Length: 207
Image 1 (tube, helix red, strand yellow):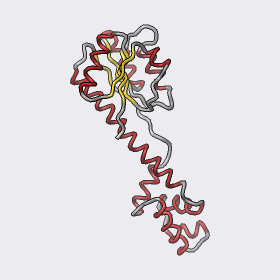
Image 2 (cartoon, one colour):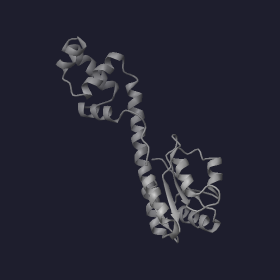
Image 3 (cartoon, one colour):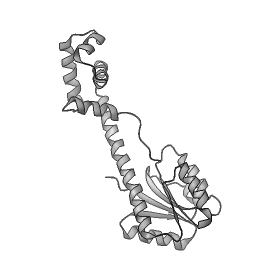
Image 4 (cartoon, one colour):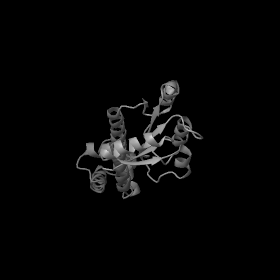
């Protein structure tokens, strides 16, 4: 399973270092950034990671960071916002906009760890489903045009006889194509083939 990074963005060095120590002490791969502007100017290469960001920062604040991160189509970076009491109304609005949680300062280390673990578990689930989807797409690419027609008809629930009528071929020929499809897709049952058909498609992204 992918080991995702945690990015900590806070202009308060003490808070940033405290979070780095907390997370690294629990085995997380964590990196710190002194400002959102620095983070966005040279964004990490990680396609999926968790961000912990302060709300109030000079220049690009936490709200602007969330907006910019959510606009990155090739990144899956769920955001946790840490905030002072005065920022709670804004944090609630940001939760509606897609952040996964906001934690008030001074933050509870246990809650912080639980929130980060939850975010990374969701990323791992998404990564696993995307890897499965890519593998299904790879297998689909091995099918001939006729085999793909049979595959599409099978996952729509059509019988061999119905497929034969639709494609103007004999039921016996459908059986031959069906066997080839099952073999190339590495499916041991029709239900497994249907699940593959349902999983095929564009990559998934988190909130």
